[in-house]
Image (cartoon, rainbow over all chains, first blue to last red; front, side):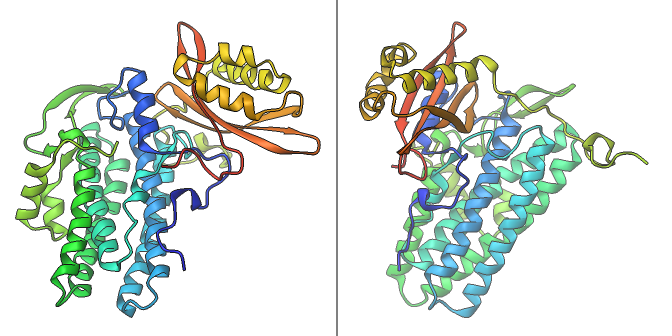
Amino acid sequence: MQRMIAVDKLARPEDHILLPAQRVRNARTEQGLAPSNAMPYEEDFLKSRMHGICAGEFQAMEAAGRTLYDFPDAPWEFQLDMARQVWDESRHAEIYLKLLEYVGSYYGEFPEGEVLWSCTQAEDPAARVAGINRGLEGLACDVFEQLIRLAQKMGDPIIERSVDYVLADEITHVRMGSQWMRKLTEGDPERFKKAQDFQNGIDELFNFGGGRTTVEQAGQIKQRVGDKEIEIDSGITIAREARLLAGFTEEEIDRLVKGFGKSSAY
Amino acid sequence: MPDLGERGNVMGPQPIGKVVEPPAAMLAAAGQLLAALLRGDFAFAEQMTTAQARADISEITKALKPRTYDKFELIGRGRVAHHYFLKARLTGVNVAPFTIQFRLGEDNDKWTVREVLNLTGRRSAWTK
């Protein structure tokens, strides 16, 4: 049985554009934009960010389903959690499809990225949940928390509540990941370390050029949104409170804040 | 009774942003490029291509037999800010479809090809 299927094996409609991050970076830098994904101060920020998240929810749904399929010998409770996650992620994808419509976009307006799927490529279920549930879903906590604060400043309860609803699930997914990473590696410190290293690689990948910081330390810039001018974060922040709720330790969060180097996923 | 088939007539949240329509000039440029490939006017296709993508377009023109294909259709589109990635299929009689994906960007009111790939036989784009 083939595990770790390539990103272009994911079922997609023919009209769908799927790109590696480097291609998106090239297109952005050629237009005089920062190479990373659309940032809060950009014209297309809400559309582009919602689109990226929506694509991420689809891939998260596929990843959880793939984990369920790839490890038939894993404990029944593990399989149940993965099945539950597939269902959660499918609801999230539906929510973001509606949010895309709400912000004046549609699925397919922007290309889908490959980078998230690359973070699912682990042979061991412990590493798989460390990477997906702790690495990627931890990142989702950061991105969603920032989006909620942005919606609050915009005075937009639709985005605020929708994303808050999804964030609650992501927190649960991180907790599931932490639990299974520990349980599956019980009595096997080497396996635990490998899973941890896999997650560390993903955390390092998503450092966004080393520009991430805490909510409190984030620089603020003024941005016009509709008929309002609001102050927004100048970069992607790390959501300490949401991460603590998700079961990350203070030490882990501090390491994220201090430890990001120069590599970047986008 | 309002017509509930129209979103504007339905109670509840209404969109806060407008859909960005693809520029007509960009679609026209894409059509010109694809028409040039169909008729085998590779010089025209190269003229539309920036220096960075000349080698890419050369690969495409080498792979295409002139006048083998007689129709094209744009089958996919996705934008990165103001640049557009487009997926197109060339078809002809008794020949397998030829699929390409390319990126168009605008400079001085002119849309040019920034990158291009032969996507024939592949389900998706530039994989690592």
